[in-house]
Amino acid sequence: MKEIPASQAYRLLEPGPIVLVTTSQNGKPNVMTMGFHMMIQHAPPLIGCVIGPWDHSYQTLRNTGECVIAVPGLDLGETVVDVGNCSGDRMDKFQRFGLKTRPAKDVSAPLINDCLANIECRIVDTTLTDPYNLFVLEATRVWINEDRKERRMMHHRGDGTFTVDGGTLDLKDRMVKWRHLP
Ligand SMILES: Cc1cc2nc3c(=O)[nH]c(=O)nc-3n(C[C@H](O)[C@H](O)[C@H](O)COP(=O)(O)O)c2cc1C
Image (cartoon, rainbow, N blue to C red):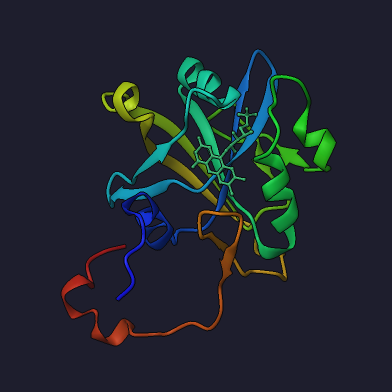
């Protein structure tokens, strides 16, 4: 086996979909790209997100305690990378990239129409934010866009390359121990 730097472990373990995170403060919405996230708990549904202080979104998330995690499809690939290569402190990224939004129900951050799904979230724990930039969020509402044809998600491999969803392997019948899960 060939050894690679330990600093690249994340490239193997970061297969969740690349997502967009919206926030809004003083009526000004913003959006960033995020690859570092994980599910933590089923009920209530908790999600861990790493959002660094170098992001404008970090401060708006800390100040408001709210965000939306939007899951883009393959058709938004280039936009997803571009959104993550500029900052909302100097521009309106929704306008710049033609992303259409609609109001969320529980949070001030907007939903993104063009995405496959939108998850409204509230911060429930910031204990690990100072040491690791890790926010623990509770998902309060999930919206699925059933109209979209392109449903393939993208998974960031860490260096600007992505794995794209392919076929589905259905092993539901073997999940005998976990039938109670929603
Ligand atoms: C593919 C990709 C993945 C990224 N993942 C993260 C991440 O997990 N956490 C993070 O803090 N920034 C991440 N970024 C960087 C932010 O999206 C970037 O700093 C962005 O400009 C922040 O926007 P803002 O300043 O408007 O908040 C990623 C960028 C790209 C292109």
